[in-house]
Length: 196
Image (cartoon, rainbow, N blue to C red; front, side, top):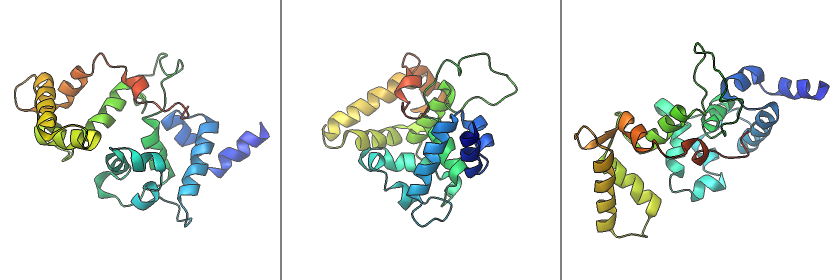
């Protein structure tokens, strides 16, 4: 037990961050070591350039959009708490998460609704609360690259927006987005097993 306490002492606000994100002590410690390894100049924060060094993000077609999520409101740096808060969206949902939650407490960052909000903002490029046809096309273009023709991509985009757009405004709202993904197991699809 003594070593656990000493590890927590090394992570600034470790107990508070653990409560907020739901990460175990061991996971939080691993993430803290990863954060410090990415912070090569020991600045105490990460920049876009630091995150671009993560191989999995470099090869992910949505890597830049995911990196953007670490820097809300035009911020140029992310501290450890902000780093872990974003990663908490990818923490798998486990049995302890599904128990009775105090309604006065905020919804867990890895809840279905928060995972959907995170995914939605990857598509909502201009942050206006709707995914336009143009935004959908841009994101799909990133995801499929040159594997399909532009004509096929536009057809997929039109069909996707048309199927999700219930109010006929030519865009997909967050509510429409959640309804279109109702049957998808988003809790598992947006989970990284190592992030327990």
